[in-house]
Length: 413
Image 1: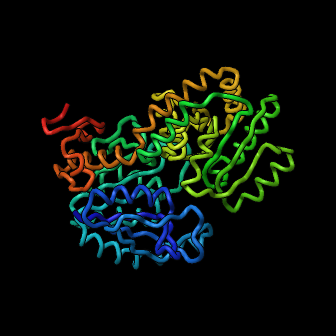
Image 2: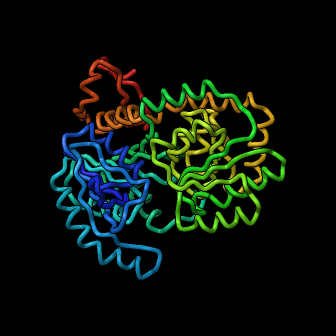
Image 3: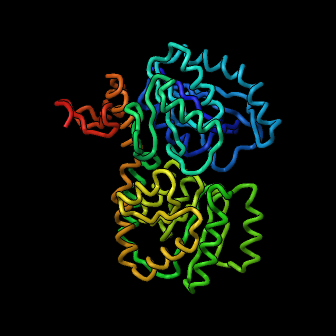
């Protein structure tokens, strides 16, 4: 089967060929194993790729790059309209060749893709991943709201996968876990977590782009609140962004010598920071389900995060961490202080995270995607992974429920 992927993922030319945003590249490498041919239409940017970029490993995946458009100013945003005709020509051409399409929302290019799918007969199988908050409490860009409405109304005539479970969730909208872990990482994380004990100082970690949307300013204020409580700690921030100098200056001005800004760390090296951390902080304004939380949980790290989107649902049902209002800096500091005062409670949350982590593996993701196609369209995807596990149980999504049920050669159970 030929799959077309349409996304806003930034790509760059490098000595290794075309590289893209690492977490997405890893996910799509595993997705490609389920299909014969994969084409990824995305946006290519000039200049040197960031340290977070990775090359693809899947030999059956090709990337077709579009010129960048958009930006912060109104002039830049108007540039999106002038770019749309060229984008539309490429998307129509690739859609006519594909058997299935996977659109990753929300983004400007995905808005165009949804509009085209509402008017084109091909491809037959249509799967949209909405990576943001499916039922946000705060105001979002108009394009996000429009895409969510079109998807809820099924104007693309396909299925949608979202993070979390929601009231009045339409029958064509399925709950999916966001993948980010290999089986090897699960084994490594579990082994390291089993040997750990809580000792001061409390080791805090942030992983992501350094901006206010991700809550870096609030992370620093949590550190300030911990100092005021007299709790020994260290905070490491892995990531970068234009606002980094401002955050570094703020931390220096407040005398937070416990805070270290380490920049982007290669994916293979991030594990040692997870292995050393007690808590991961993520007081974001908006998320779907952040992959960094799953990665940290696999190593027994306890999330203290914002109660947005599916975060409170998953942390609540697993018992792996704490979700609080985004701006509740004192509440987050208090939660950490409570864990510090009760190390057994911290250890129990860490064990719960390790136990929950396998649901976020690429293996589970492949099974869920195979189940989605089987449940929604009666199509069994042919793949190396399926052939190797032909006798094993795979997950099939029940269309009427939007949940995962085990499936074997004997049927649903």
